[in-house]
Amino acid sequence: MLRYIGKRLVLSLITLLVLATLTFFLVKLIPGNPFLDETLPPEVQERQAEYYGLNKPIYEQYFVYMGNLLKGDLGTSLKYQGRLVVDFIKEFFPNSSKLGLTSMIFSWATGLLAGIICSQFKDKPIDYILVFIAVLGIALPSMVVGPVVRYTFGVKLGWLPVSGLGDTWKQFVMPVFCMGIGSLSGLTRGMRATMLGVTTEDYIKTARSKGLSPFQVVWRHEIRNAIIPMITGLGSTIAGIFTGSFVIEKLFVIPGLGKHFTNSVTALDYPLIMGLTLFYGAILILGNLLVDILYGVVDPRIRVS
Image (tube, rainbow, N blue to C red; front, side, top):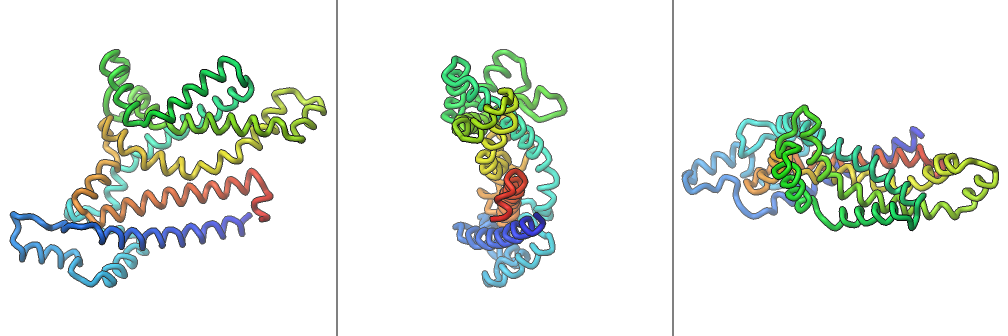
């Protein structure tokens, strides 16, 4: 198992270095000048470019950036002069992570449970209702669901706060629901399909012939085998939950990283763009690493192969 994890860890580090390289050169291809301001004299703009090392050849900038990156230095913001990119992550990511983790727990717990219920009551009214809701959740993006939910339950009925992410559970309800509904719907349909797929397998028939109760068959055999394909999407779900919070953070006025990420692109804040892209990329890579490890835990045959 340790050798299996070691291989995956090395591949993850290589992927992160490749991502850092691609991000650096792609950002440099963005047209425009971060110091282009008609109110500033050209000599001031040149001094700014010199101060941040942007007047050096591109290969020198790359080696300096990678050297700083290996030391854990993601650079200093050009727009917010003097503020480190790491400071932005420390200050604003806790809000994004609270929202993201809560949404992921909500979507996975509810989605898997709904999928299991659908498979056990196939072609029954509860199955049709849950599948219809799942299809609706996939079809409607969060930018559509968010305003409707916010207006209905926040403005019209006044049941829930319309903005912020404080200490009360009511402030989590609408943002978490809007962020998790898409993932929840996909998990419901996926778990239903995989559960129905394993019910016809020989080992399920053998378990039933042994006299195991329906609960034991479902819990010990059907769910454990049906959930393996669902783990595949866990890595992308983790990344999607965190990176997909941009719209929700703006809609519900939540001070997260999403606002600064979008602002950094429009302001051509190179260090902030690269730093946050690399940070979100690291989350995706870490998510996929956890998926690989979970695969090895759930199915030992994967470790051997």
